Amino acid sequence: MFIKQLSIFVENQFGRLEAIIDAMGKSGVNIRALSLADTTDFGILRVIVDDTDKAKSALDEIGVIAKATDVIAVYIDDKSGGLASILKLITDAEISVEYMYAFLSRDEGKALMVLKADDEARAEKVLTENGVALLNPKEL
Amino acid sequence: MKYWQAEYETMPRAELEKLQSERLVAQVKRMYEKVELFRNRMNEKGLTPDDIHGIEDLHKLPFSYKQDLRDYYPYGLFATPMSEIRRVHASSGTTGKQIVVGYTDNDLEMWADCFARMLIAVGADENSFVHVGYGLGLFTGGFGAHDGAVRIGATAIPISAGNTQRQIQTMIDFGSTVLCCTPSYAMYLGETIEEMGLKDKLSLKAGIFGAEPWTEEMRRQIEEKLNIKAYDIYGLSEIMGPGVSYECEYQCGMHVCEDHFIPEIIDPDTGEVLPAGAQGELVFTTITKEGFPLIRYRTRDICSLNYEVCKCGRTHVRMNKPQGRTDDMLIIRGVNVFPSQIEEVLLKVGGDITPNYQIVVDRVNNNDTFEVRVEMSEALLSDGVKGVEKVERTITESLRSTLGIGPKVTLVNPKSITRSEGKAKRIIDNRKLH
Ligand SMILES: [Zn+2]
Image (tube, rainbow over all chains, first blue to last red; front, side, top):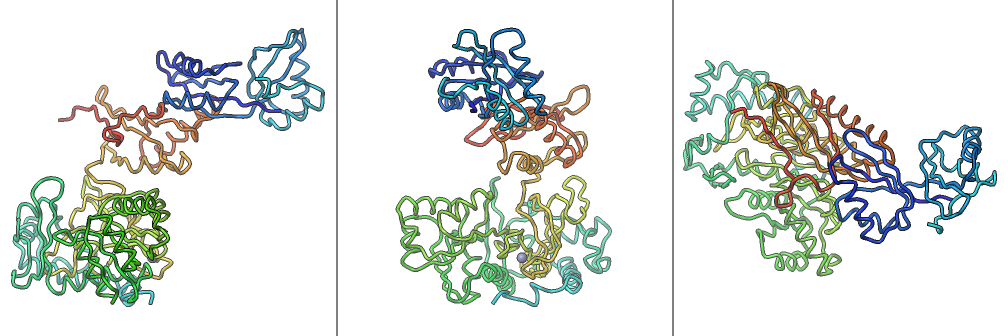
């Protein structure tokens, strides 16, 4: 089960990030998860939103480029060792994690992580086979 | 019939060079005698016609320039008495004073033959209807196409430019099969025909488009809208008019009618001849023209030449579509940089779309700074910083290997590069050199 992540190009300019978040907010898009990676010249903002198409066209209007990628969001038991057990499954299958970031969960006692592996299809398979719950795009 | 003048069009290179040499020697002799400016420039270089033995000596000859045509306006550079001039053409150019050129009977014959070669190459014959939508007047386009059509025995439709409704009606009623006009007008015709829903009523098979720059994207659109194959033709009135070079059925560069015009590619800065395949300024020498001959005329067009024999069997060298004008050339850290070279690199990196870009040059502590700003697109974007940094590096490295100097590449937001009247401002040169 994949969900869509939007990667957004953020020019290193004062107020740029704010303008991007604001544009999505004004169009009624709800941001569920977010992470920012940056260099001295630019940043890449990754977001999970409830309506990818709407977010993309809102960004387009303010001249910001965004690209959709498939990622998986994993439910993790909100207790010590919860994340480690998931990562062990992935690592044992010789899959590398490219990045991950936290997600706001609506479920008490469960944490949510966005996970991007070098082989998303296999990661998805391994986790599902081991009974790990993945976020359904309908839940966004 | 595949060729119009097979003997010349497919002449083996050695033979062709011999013919060019003979013609060049004769031309230099005649011009030295008849054209004062040429004689003076030869004398300044300490040259006489006896120093020119063949095309190997071409590089010794003095250049000629557009300004010469203005300085010797109207007939100062003509090489025959006006009684032998059968027709004149003129162009106003973008910078004021018009220039005028003249043709003898032989010149007009030669011109018709050059255009005829192209018509045959694109599949026209005596059953074709050639729709001449270039202006028939002082501009060379209209008469060039018209004479070419008559030469191959086709039916010429000399409708000239303008009045789109009438153009379309005529095209349908008269059964035009070959359309000759400017690419932008072809585009407009195509759009109008599409709107009117008349595409099915056309008999067009091919289009010959020139006289202004156009892109491959325009070619695709014109071909789609008019349901034709669109061919590129090159010419300039100083040298002859349309037909100096033309695309054959393989559309892989434009064959220069080398038995009449010798092309060279030079470094526009130093005037030195560049090796085959290099990009630089296109220079033409007319070796058969009688009325208005020119030696080593600087076209200011930037292109390159390909001497490989074409699949079509023609041996004549192919020039690529001019990539720009020398006027656009930048000298950065002593290296010549053409915006077109940057475009080529970006086209490859951008997945067949040229991203919008801007070149920013400045001088800091007596050193040139060189920045290329590239507008971000989905094709260049990835979900991580590393991926985008890799794109930056790829662009930087490709530019370094193409240009010989490496710029700082900055990725910027789409539509953030200044545009005026829809065109992006490509070059910002902040150096105060004068
Ligand atoms: Zn060819």
